[in-house]
Image 1 (cartoon, rainbow, N blue to C red):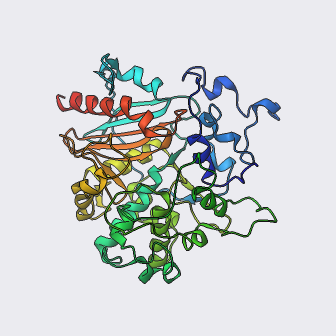
Image 2: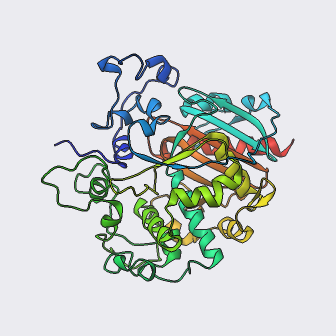
Length: 431
């Protein structure tokens, strides 16, 4: 039976693509494959949200830059004045930087890694200056791209700001802010546990299991008409009220998208603003961004806080540079420095070690940021198919990548990406 498509299903479909031979980056270029070209396009070149085809590889290489053409969205307004302009001083030598992928004995170059990871756009800042910037496929400099779970980091950062400002209390339970969550798993979870995803939820994101709870979440968020037989939750907030506990909170990191959507609800209730509105007013406009971003929304107009954001590459780099500078950017303190310092200190490495991310040795998770605890104290926002904002404080480097790798899981991408980022950081340290 075909599953109803929803805002989250594009991720679910992509997680189920396994053990097959993929076209390489050059042959899967969306311009070369001519997706959605023609008036009208020929039938074989049409990709659609109604059947989920728009997020199966290689069509996803087109759709990541055109999400609002498939699903309803709401805008994250950019700045209308005081727009920031980066200084540009490109360094072509970065292409020749070499590194050894994890699990390999053979070195490859930075330039070669871009195709291996199906890069759509990449920008590197060193000391706030653009030293590297390239676009591929369907992405252009003034375009936007799906950020996937990097969206979580924006929601988590907004929550962290509210904690610093005292509007949210770390040890206060979610039900104090959202009484409707009292009888759910989130009812006795603290703000800190939700922000750091140390909640213990009866919720599976095993997309190969047709009975996994993620399918119910997906159906609730479906903005398209529900089947007449459907009698479940009709939006994200209704679904969150049904989630049950699987054990005690606070002991183990468990990366589950619904934590972010619960935090999004809490933030909106406290501030009386939607996540897109608040992100625009607190961060996007003050940064001096140039291009409106947008969030996908469910049938009730609720933004998909856990994965629905699309944004411009340079605008994302502005955000990363602001974080690197402890909240200061465009001649103003946008985020309290204390907020950024708390993020950089990281979460519980012991709780993280108990999770499924055994390959990310000594990492932790704090305010929906991934903290490496490596020699450079790097930390990152991460999303499926290769999205990242990677910040290396020691090298004074910010790297933002948009990608459309055929495999969704970062475990398939990290062996090439993580050592590549670190190699470029070490190169820049010598500059």
